[in-house]
Image (cartoon, rainbow, N blue to C red; front, side, top):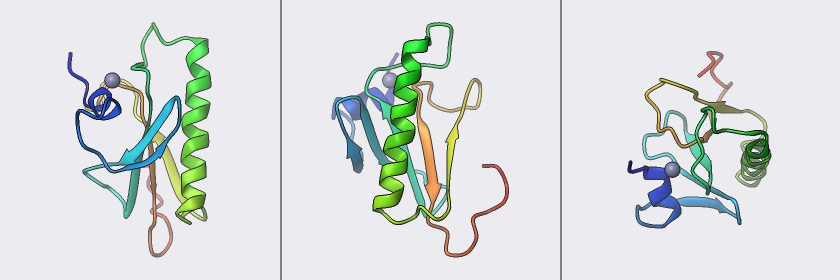
Length: 112
Ligand SMILES: [Zn+2]
């Protein structure tokens, strides 16, 4: 099965990359739902399923840490949201963390 995030990681699909280290890639969402909408993915294809194990939790903390770092760098760290979509949400299955922010006034109160 083709995974667009794996293609981006392998640089086979284009993305505007905002963060990269050995294990994590961060890039702009092509369908932004906020003034700033970034996605952070582990370079290893993992999904929220039974194969997901304790070891992968370390990757999740790295995702959060990368998003936090970028939020500070681009100065949206006064108000931002981090979201994981799990299961049949219509999202790409490769685990990814949404970082949303950059609102001019207060952050929207709804949960997405
Ligand atoms: Zn993937």
